[in-house]
Amino acid sequence: MDLLSLQEMRTMNDDLIEEQITSTKKVLFEFRMKQATRQSFKPHIYKQYKKQLARLCTIIQEQQANEQKLHE
Image (cartoon, rainbow, N blue to C red; front, top):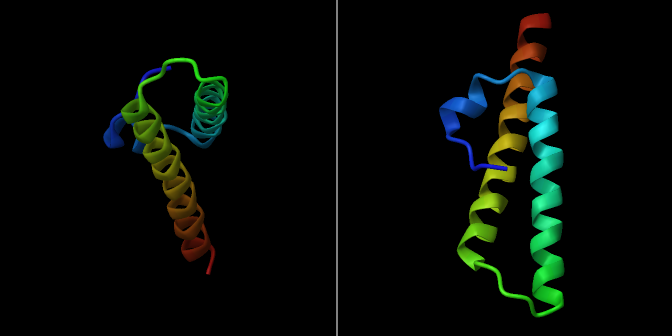
C-alpha cells in the first residue's frame, strides 16, 4: 500500500476511503507485530501511516458533517 496525498484522499468515494482505512490499519498492525518481535522496520513510515489513517478518518467526518448540513 502506498501513502496517499491529501488531494487523492479527498477525491475518493466513501467505499474507497473505507477500503483504504482497513488496509492502513492492517499495515499498522504489521508494523506493531514487527516491533514486538524485534524485527527491523522503519519507524518514520509507521508515523506516516498513522497520519494517513487520521487524515482518512477526518475526511469521513467532514463528509458526514457536510451531508448533515445539506439535510437540515
